Figure 1 (tube, rainbow, N blue to C red):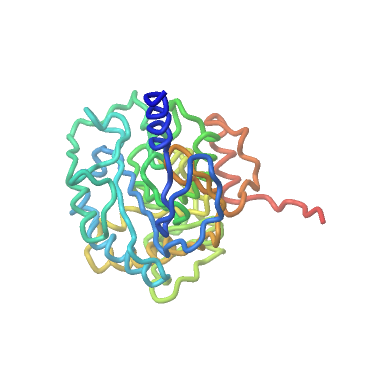
Figure 2: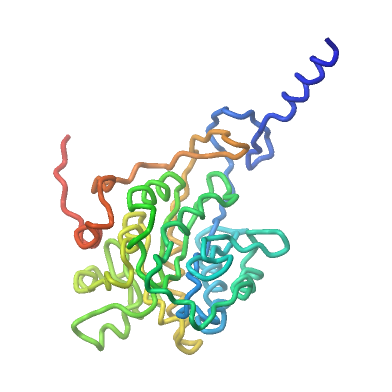
Length: 332
């Protein structure tokens, strides 16, 4: 009898539990309204291990970009921000998406994260046109990281190839994965936007669902709704990821601007960082202790276009809708 009681006690002690941001312990399967959430951000860089990202730390001014982004986050009240890097689409261990660990840690601070970009090598002949990019799988990998409960999460994707084509995962699966985990997707594409006026395209930095951002937004971030209507997304370059970004309230940027001289790269980083840091935290999300981790419900459901039935065959219509969503009737 004593031995049975001992085993019963041991199994109870080993039950998974969760720790809240304030240090309280709650049991597996319990729910709580999360309070006192730290004003902080979890940022994950997702990098395709292809030639366009070769020597990425130096070639794309990553140190400057991260420094500027973190400064903008702090200016919006987010401190003690954490950063991680997920690599995908390469060879060897990076043929499948995986997070980089340095000193056995996936997350680190803004000062240390740039060296994570040197923890993987990209070979010249890495490209394989017959293989899918696995970008959607990489985005799904982000939700498996030890993200902090209730804290806003943003993903900054550095793709080289179109995402979605030939992949096992579909649009609906990844869209709901991002929304359920309160993840906002931002893309720094390989190249520039297309505009009929090449002179204007030179100063076009990026866009969201409503406006386009240019060099003029350096001093004050306002955006240009008229210019946004003229922007043509390179669908063959971005694939489904462009719609995923816009539908999660994210952005798409001309990543080539980071490859400019430091002064130009700083202006671009200031505008990009200013928009990316515009996040409204959830006041008191309802969370569940599940598998020893707190899983919080998103603040609000965002599904205006009922995208659950879309797949990669509908890519043109999907991206067009994300760029210019229809005005839906109001039933009140």
